[in-house]
Each structure stands twice: as structure tokens, then as C-alpha cells.
Length: 124
Image (cartoon, rainbow, N blue to C red):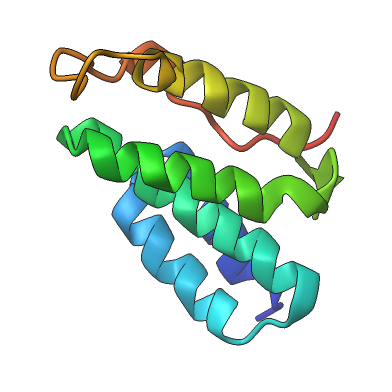
């Protein structure tokens, strides 16, 4: 079994919108990683958690994890491990745009647009 198989499986789970299972698998990889790779995996974990929270209606958690995911991914460049992170960041922000807009008070009427849930795609 190659070391990329669990990572590929995690990406597949993410793209199947199995965010909690993706989070669990990525955490196993994260616990064994160091340096920049650790931050990259932490960013993907937080992205999965952000989307899980958003789909479940936990808007505060979703917003916090969105911001944290982007902070962790910021040093991974446009492409990392064969993934198009530039596109992912753009699509991730687009999905969260209604939640990130300035609101008076708590944004109670914001729901995730299922058609805008991003996938993590390979670099072309």
C-alpha cells in the first residue's frame, strides 16, 4: 500500500461530501506529518470541518473554520500534491460568500448553496 492511498481516499471522501469521514482520515495523516505538509493537511481538515458545519447550520463554526482553513493553506501555493488549490480557494470562498458578507447580528437566514460546495480537483 503506497503512502498516497489514504490521502487520495481522503480527497475522494471530500469530493463525495463525506466531510466528517474526510476529516477523520486527514487527521490520521496530519498526526504523522511535519512542517509545511502539516499546515497543508490542517487546512484541508479545517475546510472539511467548515463545510460540515455549514451544511449542518452551525454558521459560527463554519465561518471560523473557513478563515482558519485559508490561513493554513496560504503557504501551499497554487498547486500542491497535484491539487489545484488556487481553484479550490476561489470556489471555497464563493461557497461561503453569503456567510461572510457583513450582517447585522447573527446571519440566521444563511444556508449553504449545495450547487456551490467545492471539490478538490487535480491540477490541469
